[in-house]
Length: 406
Image (cartoon, rainbow, N blue to C red):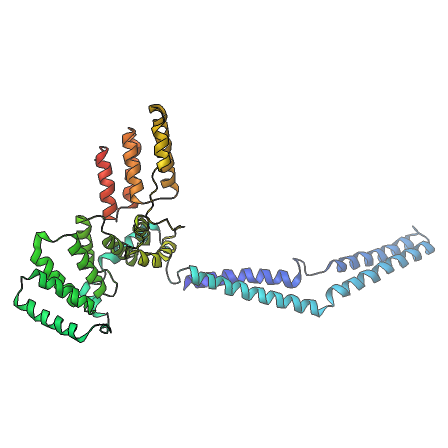
C-alpha cells in the first residue's frame, strides 16, 4: 500500500506541474503587456512632474503625453488579446487534461505489464535464497497428483486394447517379478492417460532391476511422474532426474525437465542456461525442442537476459578454416593464434556469458597455456554461474581436473 501511495503522490505532483505550465503558459501569472502598461503609466506621471518643475514646456509635455497614450492604447490592445480568449484557455485545459490522463494511465499500464505489483524490492542474493526455500518446501508428488483432474480416456483407443490392458493388470499381480510385464503395463497405462498407474508400474520395473536399472529407466520414470502431476516437477521427480543425469549427463529429456523445475522454483536464469544449451546441441527434431521454443523467450524475459536464439546444433569453437590456417603457421605463430582465440573466448564469456561447454573449453585452454591462476579464476566464476546445474558442474569439474586445479 505504501508503494502505491508514494507513486500516486509523485505522479500527481508531476501532472500538476505539467498542467499548470500548459494552462498558464509560463511561471508568471501576468502577461508581458501588463508590465508595459505599468511602465507607460509611470511615464505619464513623470511627464506631469517634469512640467510642474519647469523642466519641459507645455507643448513638449503635450507631445509626450500623446506618444505615451498611443503606446498605452497599443499595450492595452495586446493585453486584451492575450487574456481575453476563452477559447485558448479552454483548449489549453483540454490538452492538459488529456496529457494528465495519458501520463497517469500509461504509467500504470506499463508498470502492470512490466512490473510486479505486490512484490517488494529483492536483491539477487535474497531472490536466490527465497527460490531455494521454495524449492525445499514445495508440494510432494502425492499432493500434486491430488490437484490434477482425471483426464478423459483417449478417443483413438479400441475397446479390445482396453480389455488387453485389463488382462495385463491382472497378470502382473500374479507375477511380481515379471519385469517385462510391468514395463508393458507402464507403457499401456501411459497410452491410456493413466499416468499415476504408469509411474507406479515403472517403479516396479526399477525395483526389480535393482542396480541394473539404467539412465533410460530413471528418465522414463521421472517423465511419468511429471505427467501425472500435470507438468509439475515434484521433489520425487527431481530425485529421479538427478539419478538420470548421474548415469547419463547428456540425457536431453532429463535436462529439459531439470530446467523446467528450476523455472518453477524461481530460478529462470538457470532454466535459461540449460535450455539454451539444449537448443544449441539439437537435434532440431528432438522431442524437447518444441517445448523449449514455446517457453524460452518468456524465460529470458523473467531472467532479465537479452537472449538471442542460437542456431540449433552449431558450436562456437574454431571453424574448419581456422584449423586449416593454424596448420600452415609456425609454432610461435600458432601459439599466438591460440592465445588470441582464448582471449576472445574469455572476453565473450565475461560480457555475454555462454554455455558450460564454453567455460570448460576456456579452463582447459588456459591450463594448456600454463595460465593456471587465470584458469582458477575462471573456474571459480563458473562455479558461481552454474552452481545449481549438476550436469554443468560435472563438466566443469572434469575440465578443472584435467589441468590440475583440483
